[in-house]
Image (cartoon, rainbow, N blue to C red):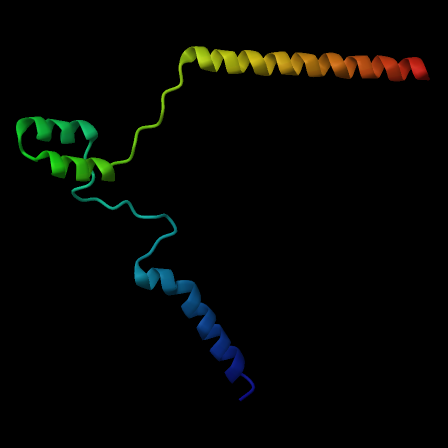
Length: 105
């Protein structure tokens, strides 16, 4: 009788821990494969060849993920330059503060 409660708690804990194994679930989300796993280029080719009409193309095109926007190389260089200028100014200010503190002493 004294062992009944710990036994029930242990079985419940074991069932809770192994539940993902029973369901076939893993920690990572599953990639759904099917008719939507198609490239935008293939979709455009199918439209041009007449395999799909304009309405179906628009519907499928809306389901496809949009490509990430492109960033020009010049914009990246400008960001890097701005970051470097900011760091240089911060170092100069820190150096001036250290000099001012040293003069005070």
